[in-house]
Length: 246
Image (cartoon, rainbow, N blue to C red; front, side, top):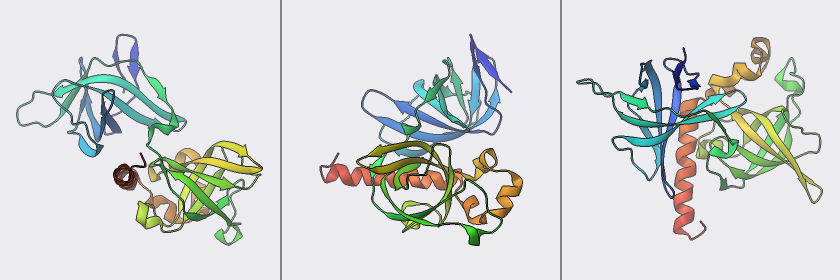
């Protein structure tokens, strides 16, 4: 179902998860919500759940609404207020703005060094025993992905599996699927900016047959677990600010 305001069409569906960002020039607050319903004013959403940040939502807040699609994250501006239904904690999004594509660096990044292993999936092997694991290291980390040092044959859009040392500490499972979104070279070294693939998005990148061949552990990285990673990055930011690094 689509809802429209003016010339703007918002391609959301009931129960879809969205991210609501309350923002001004210096601070932001990040919340998670779900689409409940549509009406003439715009969109009814569930009561937002706080994820991180400093700026709190208030009545008639101006916000950005973020939603994910296989190719990118998108957002549109909106105003938000209580829906007005007695005993109902839903919120009304109104004065919906135009959709715009968000740069994939919408997640805050922190410098983070950790050893890892990755296996390219240029061809999905019939057995996980056939995976070729390579040693690497992270340079930075966000809830959406990481920058890692890689071999020269890694290319944009390559799929891979990643085993990060001490993964549980940052909120990742022992194994996660990812896609290379950009590749760069500096002083004879190659780097890949990879995006984590959540459980909810696996079928956007792998066929049903491919998923049967891959370790089931990759389905543990859900949107809920990604929210824990958001929290880890936020807490690390606070520590770095206290150390005077940010």
